Length: 160
Image (tube, rainbow, N blue to C red):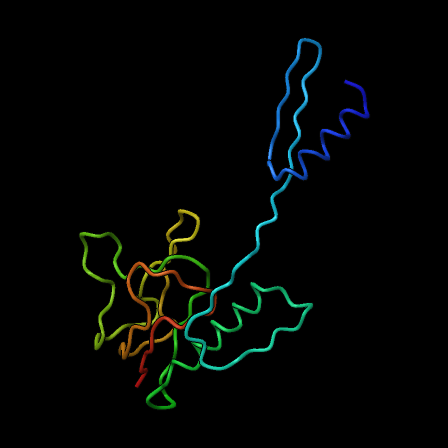
């Protein structure tokens, strides 16, 4: 095969929509790979307010801002003394140390500073999340085994 035939073959493969072609002969091997360009679909459900996305801003950053806006709006403190414990990492939230053990904390339970509230799994590592202050658990904002984002509210604690 000469260079002209290879170029024509590349054009033909590109036009045909085939992603990969391999040709093997006694004296040579050739593999032609093309990237298929599929349209990307982004589905956003239950967005409370419209958000404008500048053309230069990446889509993932805009979606993360929408999610942060939703979680911030949904956390209503009953009084100004209450504090929010937020996720320090991205991962999967677990209320129990293992499936057969009881939860670390329950609503209404008193906790001391340094008590473990939950674990967040990130890349197969289980990170214990400790309370930054003493008080009573008012609300648990995340369901067990749910994905959580960085800085997402997890617990509301009343330190009084």
